[in-house]
Length: 318
Ligand SMILES: Nc1ncnc2c1ncn2[C@@H]1O[C@H](COP(=O)(O)OP(=O)(O)OP(=O)(O)O)[C@@H](O)[C@H]1O
Ligand SMILES: [Mg+2]
Image 1: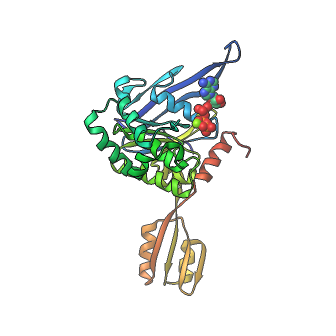
Image 2 (image 1 turned 90 degrees about the vertical axis):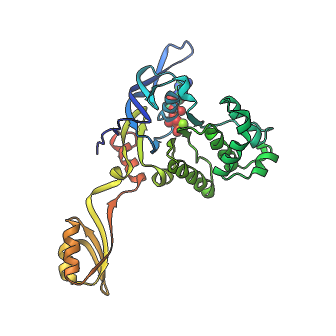
Image 3 (image 1 turned 60 degrees about the horizontal axis):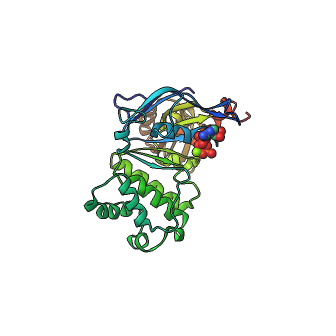
């Protein structure tokens, strides 16, 4: 399946033909291309997941969007401004992949430091830190009294997300926000992301944890060996054609068998696969005094889709 890049008249992010090569080798006379001719856009207010195997170029792409690294070729915009625009950085949040947390600062002091970088007005900083700690569900007491060397991995990751939100950004970049967390920690990060989305923010994050991505993302892109394999709305990617898995009760088993593939019929309850018009089927079932209890579009998991894309691109053997 080839999916067209997302289109939007006022996107949060857009890149066209963006490429990044690094000079390597002792004499810096070799070159390695880590992001190659990538084009896509992310509509505002969306949760966007960038997926790809280790070394695919995800972090590099994030750095290009944040203006931390400069593209070798191509161009892009973030919140309508060219990549690297300094005033725009005030409107962005960023959790780096391996964020450094100062062992001998408390979480509160760390957030004061983040607020100072953004030159937030002194009188509102304490209130803002309190609000953000509530948002990421970190206790004010722990943030004030405990040094960060005493924090669990989950607490550190949440204080990391908190610093990314200190300036109330419109667009937040999170590089592997769930990595190394237990199921509860991942749940908490997912909730934070969903709450940000509810507040109208755009969230752009890299992740290897496909089940989490599937739960929170509106759209995804898959990158491998620096190239974009696909990009689009998650539901569109995972939906398999126009067939439905339907479940119901009552009606005439023999007639239902004419409609449903792989049908299972027991004690008046039935289920099967419908690849014909759903409205017509609903009318047929009600005409025979039956009832449809569930009709779900057939969809594949994000993991199945992801592996398929990597196989098709010969990134993994078929
Ligand atoms: N400064 C650099 N100089 C040379 N090569 C680099 C540099 N930064 C990254 N690379 C190379 O670019 C490739 C992509 O790296 P990147 O960190 O963007 O991948 P990633 O998709 O984020 O991987 P992971 O999932 O492991 O975090 C890797 O092969 C890496 O070695
Ligand atoms: Mg990375």
